[in-house]
Image (tube, rainbow, N blue to C red; front, side, top):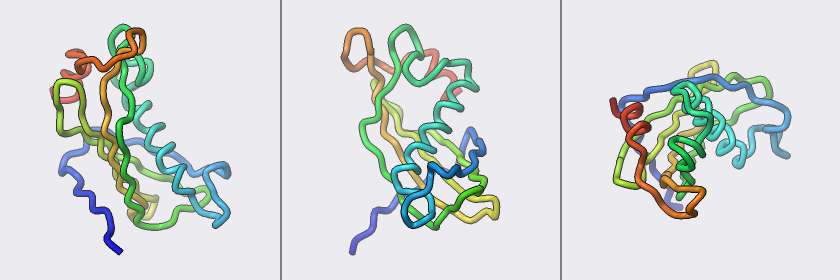
Length: 142
């Protein structure tokens, strides 16, 4: 079976820690595959809040972003009570979009998952694609 490969960038600009909750577990008693995406979203929102944004839907006026695609490569199981470090990096900026990479490790430095979300900036009021706000771009690339 061919496996999806994901090459992580060298530089991560944010990290946070999240604890695995009972609601994150599946029938196998480990973190469910759908919950990894939720943990990535939680880390992403915490990152944006650290920059002074309310959430990922309000970077500038009614412009935020939507997820266009997502990839998760699972490396190992994670269990109730594990403290996960989620690191975030940004790459591949275009006029309307960029990619966000995630490296998730547990408290023993064992890799749990790698992820990537492709995001497109979107004007929620006009209901159409919008350019990446300059204010956001400056905070992400300096």
